[in-house]
Image (cartoon, rainbow, N blue to C red; front, side, top):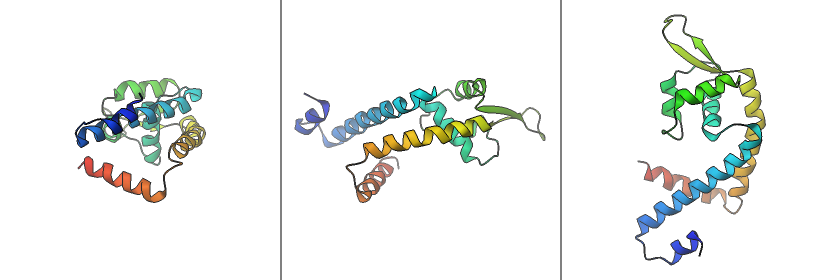
Length: 149
């Protein structure tokens, strides 16, 4: 019996059913997005860092800014940034006013990669939510936001 069927028929407390449903769905989404990113040789956390850097609109970001904006706080931000630098997708910038301060920017290659990956991820997300209305998506998003308060 599939887990979603077990959750429907089980006598688990509602809060646990919800928690399990969210965890299973998060894993499903993670797997699908990772599969979409595979041809581009980039992981979900690396993709996340690149999107954070793009969101800086040309301004550099320090490691703590990147870390606090990460979807998964468990990621080793330094290792992720080092990997992106080795791939030529990001670069370290020495702060002119404080030479000890190192910041990170996205490169032209990083921006070009996002131009390719964004449509692939958008397509996966659209396919996964195809059975939901805009109102459904807003409602679920609002409920998830309430859980995190």
